[in-house]
Length: 622
Image (cartoon, rainbow, N blue to C red; front, side, top):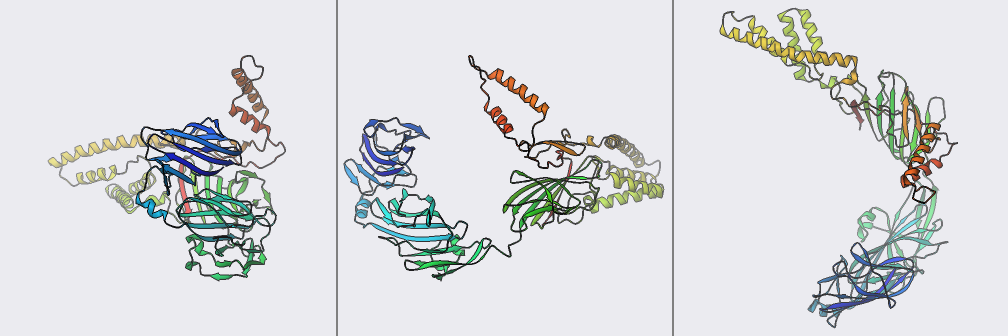
């Protein structure tokens, strides 16, 4: 929709407006005003029109064509401003019968209904000025892309100007525009010129285009009127596609120009009307591509019997070479999805399974198994280098991680939990046991304290308290009052020890028989339900039966259930007097998705992923 000049005549009682529009297709036209000042008596080409409310703004819905829109406003007191359409550029404002040479139109699309006093008279004598600076960025992509940045410095009256030609438009051998971004009403004409409705200020317009054929040479279109005869161009090479040499134009220092900051890192050239930029191709492709930038996030579940692992990998990053990802032994690849598409797993030798990668930017998810009770695990498990890697190891009930080596972080394992205070307390307690009774009791106390020290609710600090009292009672006189007091304290400590030890013993026996009853443990229901985004999975005996809607047909039992649901939905939603049921949108979408299943697709579904979370250990590498 292209607007013409908006004529607005306002006084203290109201205002009248007139504007012409040209529509190239069905569109919504925003009228002046808002919900507080609504236009009245609106006509389109002399006929009364219906004004719609869209986000508290008056709009008209019109088909393609030429239109003359008129309307008026009634108010008791003239408002300070009036909201206009964002694509209104030319304004002819009259206040109380006096023409306002330079209407005040701000960035919030508000037309201020006031005079500027002497400012209007001073500015009225200023000549109409339009300064243009043009910068372009050429990206040697496939196809080649050109971004044109036009900077305008405007003074004088509101007016419509025609600049250019900006581009040589040709769908066969020239540029094809793809995007135009302008704060002013702007339109690219068929001859490549740019039509603008300008007003005083500084403005930036960007135009993007792609080249129709293979790019070999470029020159500037013949400049007209006030379009600059010379421009500054920057070149963004794509060495992974091809390597070129630029000839025919002079290179300049980008830091000595008015280029945008992001463009000053690229090589710059001076383009003149009589010069031609030639791109001489040296080589296609990149013989020495940069290494792939891949990041691995792995989650592993140790089997309940400790004889294997279930693994879920997430790989993100950029592939630049190789174009195949393979898993190393002892991992057995079961399912791979790239960018939400399941992939068929292939093997180039007997030991490695992998998938072909065709996209540079990948988002890979893989499920695999390690069917060995390994204590030395690979950091990544893939036959590739990674920029970063992290593993979350899930241990089942009854298992604790003794220690970990070969990682950059220090996980909270059993061995890493010990500090100097813990060691001092355990050793002192064992030595006191040995000195008070026998060395065998000291060894038993040492072994017992080491095993139970980091268990939940373990009675640890009661032992030094009790042993200190027993040691004092052996050296103090029998009849002393302090001795009697210590005996009472010893008996109370023994009672406290009994209160602490009995529940702890019960918990230890219960957890030994049923480790999943450990305190604070999460629920293990549906422990083998997959959380994969590729389907609903269930596992039995370590293997999975997956209902992937895009790959396998539903089973007969599922069909019967679906038929029962369909009959139930149909009976509830059948309209009176109608023979066909009205189905719910969600159910209809589900049914349509099931119909589109390919019964011949065969893609590996892999092992079922556990869903339980018990003791988790995070391992990472920098």
